[in-house]
Amino acid sequence: MKQFKAESKRLLDLMINSIYTNKEIFLRELISNASDAIDKLYYKSLTDKNINISREDFFIKIDIDKENRSLKISDNGIGMTEEELENNLGTIAKSGSLAFKEENEKKDNIDIIGQFGVGFYSAFMVSDSITVNSKSYLTKDKAYSWTSKGAEGYKIEEIQKENIGTEIIMHIKENTEEENYSDFLEDFRIKEIVKKYSDYIPYPIKMEVIHQRKKENVENEYEEYVEEETLNSRIPLWKRNKTEITEDEYNSFYIDNFSDYEKPLKVIHSFVEGGFSYNSLLFIPSHLPYNYYGKDTEKGLKLYSNGVLIMEKCEELLPDYFGFVKGLVDSQDLSLNISREMLQHDRQLRVIAKSLEKKINSELKIMINEKREEYEKFFANFGLQLKFGVYNDFGINKDSLQDLLLFYSSKEKKLVTLKEYVARMKEEQKNIYYACGESIEKIDLLPQVEAVKEKGFEILYLTENVDEFVIQTIMEYDKKTFINVSADKLDLSSEEEKAELEKANKDSKEMFEKMKDALGGEVQEVRFTNRLKNHPVCLTSEGPISVEMEKVINSMPNDQKVKAKLVLEINEKHKIVDKLKELNSKEDKEALNKYTKVLYSQARLIEGLSLENPTEISNIICDIMSK
Ligand code: ADP
Image (cartoon, rainbow, N blue to C red; front, side, top):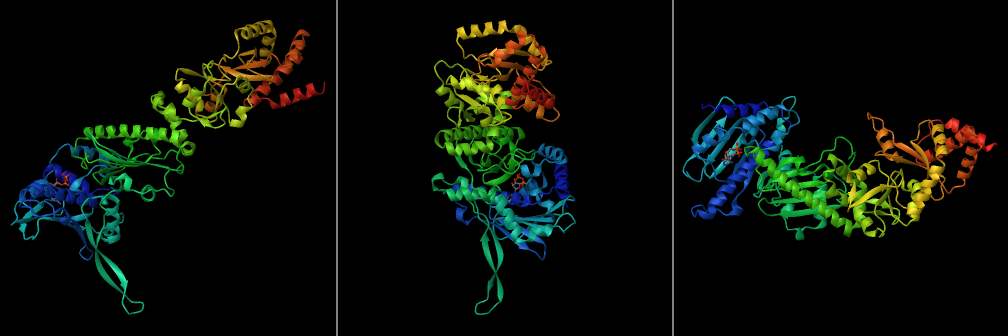
């Protein structure tokens, strides 16, 4: 009995005692090895005239022997010599990979085995004894057998074997309480695993499957017969020519593979050639997945290495803001194996991720221009995600995402892009106007909105909590500043009008001080405004926190409470002003206080803010009414 090298023994121990739940991947590993071995012989055959085999003759075969609990995987690939059996199966060639694996195996949740090939030894997760019979194309007259029951060691002896190639015979473990190993002896289960991981292996994976059929000429009697099936479909959809794929094929591929019941809104299928080539097939779902904005949603794409699934959900391939995209990436330049340098691996993924991101972005932009209705549907589902993308990470991605946003336009009465808004701006217009509120209807009724509309300017109506934060993150679009019609200084009036307003404010300064006092510090200032047209009052804010932001921030759990600096603005042209002035000149302080409180309450209600003392206000109103 020969001993495994120390590192191999440790890896074996890891496999034998693996608590890894995804044991089925052993089959993927063995099939990939077989496929690699065939590749090798095939490439040799291209130059070596002594090798007489054509591509169609290659195959991988799976045999199940339930009685003996044995599972066999054979190939007619390159085979192994005695030394190769010794070197390949007795040692792990590349050190470092094991250390990595051990370290990560301990961390929960890291799907290390699922992410990187662990190779041949993974077969020990499901079997207690393994025999590898192999005949190399180099030593056609000699074949060897390698056997091991695990950690104690292995034996190699000469055997008789007719054909070149390798067969791996596993004795499947007895069932335990946790694991039903017998599953791996069921043909439906094997079929399922092959379909899942190895469907696109380029060589046929064959298995004899038992079927039943009705006996001829006999009623109600069945007989069994065996038929050899090819389990894999071999050519992945994403490797086929785009022009030959029907919409139905894409749709059912999506539904079959990405646990959705509706066809996708958009399919993005690309081939990227170059220093680093890959195929990608991406889908944008047509509806919001259940609980999409909840905590548990995981983004990611399937990752294939030349047709072999190596990662079910590779997060690194998608930025969070495109987390709704489903699909896969296949690259022949990616190794299935852990043994490749991890860092290099990461760099390759980053290159792909960057180019996918660009592709998705540009496809969405095309959709905005060419299929607006479709885009609106998309935006209704995932617009919020894009907005978070603009806002998160201190706005680092705003430049690439801002043109994907849609906001409701007061003028167009539909969703528009910032680009469209700017293109329509009037010559004298310097800023982009927006207003915030709970709904389009409510914003439309805001007194502050009226005057801006009156001047013929378009206003963007922001109705989602995150909107104003997004706008503040963008700060400027096409060198135009965003102006909140109810917070910022609006520059709508002429110099003359401005001077007039200033004078009016000065003249009533003393009255405003009294009114401010009446509100007991609720507002920063009371003043006249010309931002109103018909309405008597409105609330505006000064400083970085607007009224809407105050509402949003304060509704978040565990967050510091903030307060917008409020200003009560009164329409100088409104007839209520005469009344206020009259009360002030009569020195009727009590009445002025009451009027002020009512006006302030109205302004709060219009803004969608609640009243802190509704009974008091109700009493005051009745008082005034009954005078
Ligand atoms: P890896 O495939 O990552 O190199 P494995 O442990 O799966 O690691 O296999 C080790 C080596 O054994 C392979 O590199 C290959 O040279 C050889 N090998 C495994 N399976 C076969 C096979 N079916 N035919 C020929 N060689 C094989």
